[in-house]
Image (tube, rainbow, N blue to C red; front, top):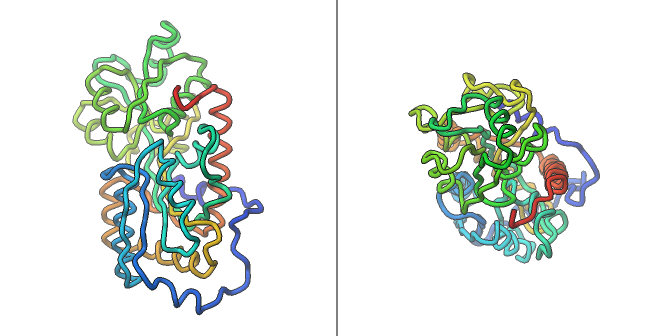
Amino acid sequence: MQRREILLGAVGVALPWAIPAQTPSQSQAQAWPAKPIRWIVPFAPGGTTDVVTRLVAVELTRSLGQAVVVDNKPGAGTVLGVDLAAKSPADGYTLVTVANSFCVNQTLVKNLPYDGLRDLRPVALMGMSEHVLVTHPGSGLKTLANVIAAAKKQPGKLSYASFGAGTSAHLAGAMLEAQSGIEMIHVPYKGQAPALNDVIGGQVTVMFGNWPEFRQHVHSGKLVALGMATAKRSLLAPQIPTLAEQGQAIESNSWNGALVRSGTPDAVVLKLHAEINKALQAPAVMQAFQEGGIASLAGTPERFAAFIRSETEKYAQVIRKAGITSES
């Protein structure tokens, strides 16, 4: 996937999670795991992050010889589930899958009960779904230029949906507003599915969202794809022009990766990292990713850590510039 090199080549800075160069104790790695592993997903069941986690968990159960139990703990914009992991023992028996919201919340949420850059340690980046900007056929909009022209003609009238305040879809809309000099109405929903339904029904004009969930509706004619939020044309949808081709260099996606509590032994982190990367190469996982339009990602824990820092800073700039709050 075209974003792979960008994601895995994030700026290499000094990181609190960096693994020492010396070889970790083999005894630590061999002793773990001695009991079942809890894998927290801070989202409701059924979404992309949940699906990716469950696919990998099945493979880990086989390779580690211990049950890896997925535990959905949605709530408070993922803060609830992430906080449980941040306060768990640092022994490698609790993982949490995070997504873009993990980086967003560092700036967006006041009085966050944990410090994501200090209390949790990156293990492995797992998957990424590209975003597409869509509208409904009744809008009459065919291109990004049409959207910008309509918004400038009637400032504050055109609406855009998201799957919640502070989500990647919300921030992508804010970036479009800032770059193109337009003003739209943000309509947040509790999840992508209800937002998508209202865009299809014409209650909201446009929306950024995951191509895997949108593609069937684009192919059936229920949605009009205005542009992919990717640097280059997507391998999954090469027929759709990018937003950059249309004058607005906006990149947006939904990614997910695994973290553990800071202080978890290096040997355990390295073993987990290796096993997750091996699971991503399992035929069943690769097939499910391909069918679901999910890019499989890999790389070292250090590069994932650098990616998290770069994403946190990117979203912080958007949030501050647009004056976004958790209620926006």
